[in-house]
Amino acid sequence: MGPALCLVSAACFGAMAIFGKFAYDAGVSPAALLLVRFSLAAALLGVVLLLRPGLRRAEPGEHRAVPTGRVLATAIALGAVGYAAQAGLFFSALRLMDASLLSLILYTYPVLVTVAAVLLGRDRLTPGRTVALLGASAGTLLVLLGAGAVSFHPVGALLAFGSAVTYTVYILVADTVVHRLPPVVLSALVMTGAAGTLDAGAVLTGGVDLGFRPPGWFWLACIAVVSTVLAMLTFFAGLRRTGPSTAAILSTFEPVVTTALAALTLGESLSTVQLAGGALVLTSVAVLQVRPTRKQDREAPAAARDDAAAPTAVAS
Image 1: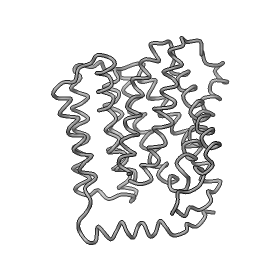
Image 2: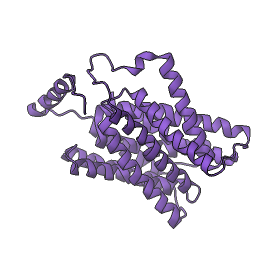
Image 3: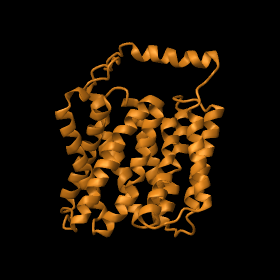
């Protein structure tokens, strides 16, 4: 279930660049896009939690300690600092450079996440994971480079790489609290934090222009509902089941979705190179789901499940 949730999340995030292009065509500015996106997403998640109180609690069979103030503050900071900054860098870069090159630079983050997770002792760089990471990265390169010539903007490239670094930190920090809060609660706190930062920024800068054409509101709603709320819920649920490295590698499916949607909606054709790259990404995803067969490898997950079922001490 974990890998499937990560793939759904990647598909939802993959549609965001298409929605964003259409929103820009309707006269939406990056500041307005971010403000409406996070404010609407926070409101929607709040309504979901009000209508479905059960989503505030742990899933059946799980034992989760009552979250401390530190855990709640970390979740809000994930949105107020991490997600708001990452999205701001991404959409600012999107105005300066081609989407394909932006995605290529952004997707250095799976490598950054995996390396950082290994250095922090959170993950093992097994031979299978190494092959999957290399294969997924190579497939992503083929998908994006197969689009043909792209323009290069130094400032845009710098913003794109900053977005990748910020997202790396975001994933690693999220992994420390994702087991302490239900996915919907965590997503709501993240969205609220991001909306708070952007609302404060709008006040300090004299407001945001919301006088764009009606189609702009439709595309913003798509970004908020599909590429934010649904994408966030499935990502956190998948991250909780797979760990940061696997979640990051599976997310490389996102540019494949973006390229396919661009072909359908913007008239871009898929080349043979792009199709080969997409197949390589999907093959890497399949490799990640191969279960270990050695006895000690089968016993390790069982032990981990037993440990997860034990009550967790509340941090001071």
